[in-house]
Length: 349
Image (cartoon, rainbow, N blue to C red; front, side):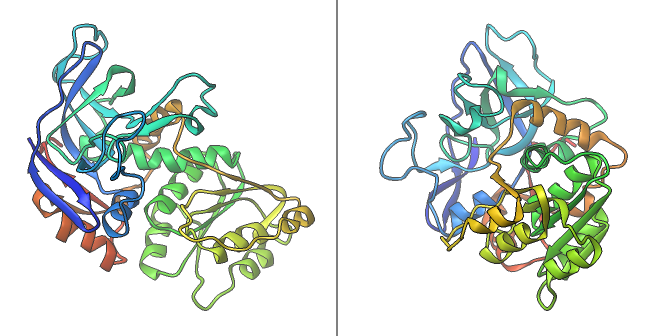
């Protein structure tokens, strides 16, 4: 099968790879659409970071060269002898994260886990083989193209859940790249009344308005904290930090009301100084969110199906697998108007 394989820094090659054998509890999926994640871009541009290069991953036994990709939808091609829930032709999405299952759903994702596209071969390929437990059916009224957004939406939906966003809340989102945009979608779905979005790009902020932000502000020449405090003197109910820099980290804490929630969603590439007294004197609750619970993954399908959900502005480009480097990675790096780029593989809509 054709696959986009990461060999090392700025070295991704589209080549032939063998399809993994289908075990008795496995489902073989013909990939239809797969999205390029910021993690994929980081692995290409400045990595390998999470992909093992010097020795095999302790849980999967795999290492680079590795097929990238973990956001995808597809059609069942074959099932193992013990599989009862799926049959050939079923339309599905796959949760790419495998956890130990030894802990409660709320914390299992923080123990031993591995992910397709990072620790084992992923979805930038014609076929993907998954355990039946990670496969989720999608209803007929959800296109396979849009279903490829379930995974990144799940990341945002979990962060919104961790922030305890409820009906009528005011939420601030710092950074409106793809996950920030999905955070706005998820906050709206959770019932947030006011959603404030902050970024340095007017193009991204325009998308933020389209997907549900009630107010936006370019922070290049404006103070987000002052903007928020003028409207909400005690602060917002929750802030999501999705930019990954100290400035937005500090702003999120300063903008949130006492006992409100600040959830760090972004991956911070650099260390910075932080004095915990900021939390002591504000009463803000600081936490982080990684990945998602399996139930959140499934519920994200319902968010996408909701008639009030608009994710079309996030889908900015569709490309072919052989163009993943130039039209995918390079486009995301050089064009801020790009958000989510989908790779068409199987062709089904």
